[in-house]
Image (tube, rainbow, N blue to C red; front, side, top):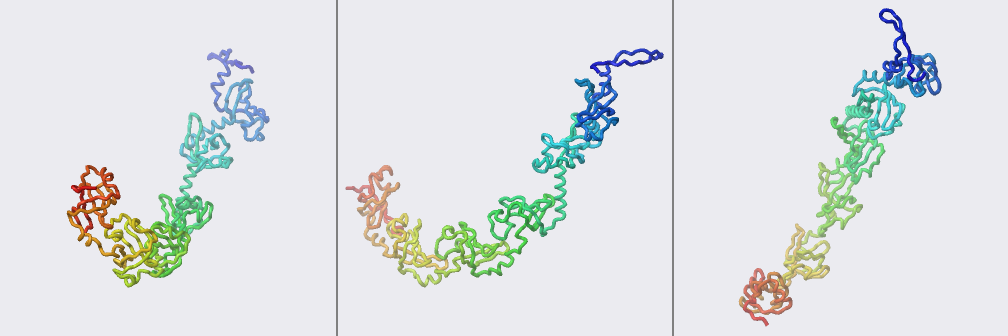
Amino acid sequence: MAHGIQRLFLSEDSEGNSGEIPAVDYEQTFHRIGQGHVVKGRVTAVSAKEVIVDIGFKSEGIIPAHEFDSLSSLKPGDEIEVLLEETENEHGRVVLSKRKAEKSQGWDRVVEQVEEGATLEGKVTRKVKGGLMIDIGVEAFLPASLAFLKGFGSLNSLLGQTVQVKIVKINPSRKNIIVSRKDLLEKEKQESKAKFLEELEVGAIRKGVVKNITDFGAFVNLGGIDGLLHITDMSWGRIGHPSEMLKVGDKIEVKILSFDKETMKVSLGLKQKDANPWADVDQKFPVGSKVKGKVVNVVPYGVFVELARGIEGLVHISEISWSKRISNPADVFKVGDGVDVMVLNIDKEHEKISLGIKQTESNPWVGIESRYNVGMKVKGAVRNLTDFGAFVELEEGIDGLIHISDISWTRKINHPKDVLKKGQEVEAVVLMVDQTNHKLSLGLKQLIIDPWEEIASKLSVGGLVLGTVTKVASFGVFVEIEKDVEGLLHISETDLASAQQLEGTFPVGKKIQARIVKIDLPARKIALSTKGVPQN
């Protein structure tokens, strides 16, 4: 029919007189009673592309065939419910929708029965942008971010599946529902963990799979929960990183060390499956026994030596040698070196063993006092020079120290290298022997008689002396007045106005005449003055 066709209706008035009522716009009347509403209709024809339905209107309505799940079960005469979308399209036909009718009816039915927070089942029907559509009586949207516990996962794996979801949001105005699968999975996970912890027992052995490895340990999936296997609980022996023992995917058996039901944390142990090697360490390695070991770590304060798998001891730097002064163990040892050690002490409670290397050798200091008497002359080679003196090797393992103050009676020594050099053969006098503390003191100046008494008898306060400038300092100049005997000419005992003039007036090597103003024999000091003393 053409657009805008009117129908005439006959009616009787209140007095029974029949007549023609005014023409009415049938389309407007139909719009008022049906457009956007669900009505019943009767199938008149079924084709591969569309289904024709009569709803008692001026023309029959059409519904696309894809809105029906099974066309084969549909036949003319069947009564169905449809939603009136348009009273007339461009071809003059009524536009109907079966799917929208179902959606409208389903929406009302679902909204009446459920509310936000409710849990129900639905079938995943199709994949859309950003997620999935689920049939829960009406189509609901499952965002990809709410489909799995971690990440988006594989949305395709859920297509066609019937899953449980939780209603997150209902929007009546837009007639859409948002659901979440993640919330239920998280709840299920927590319930599973709680149940797992209820069945867990400390000391039990459980199978697991290594899930992740970090610097401090490995996380092991036990089936219902992840547990931490700390690096210190992996082996009784030394390991530098968990990856030395495990890799992701390894199937292992672990021991439950502890667990907390509130925080759901589980601590695991691998080494605890075996007996603690420290349990009978004092029987395996009694104090005083000599043992062969292997260096497993070198540190500034000593070396760690492995005696057996899981048992290490420390050789402190002071226990390495009787006589050699070792400042850095790395200069002597490297990881993997085999060494002989003696067990010095065992602390089972804290799993510590003190070891010594020098105790495996004879102590050269034993009987030292009978071999070296105070006052005897000895010879040796300078082995080392320090700021405070020189070490002279007298025999293998025995060094004597010549302190800087025992090098010369008269000369001021700033550093031993000014007089001695490494490897030089020297003669010295034994000044002190201490067997207990492994110390032996030597002296060079003691080889001759102290010359100061003779010097003091030759010099007198007020006398004039001729000397040579040997050093210029900010406070004065040193003048050699006898062999290896110096006097100090302080700036206050000169006619100079400032220290800047010292070097120009008294250069090193210049011979000057001075007067002795003080002699301090105990301190071995002579004070000089040039005030009133004529210079050549």
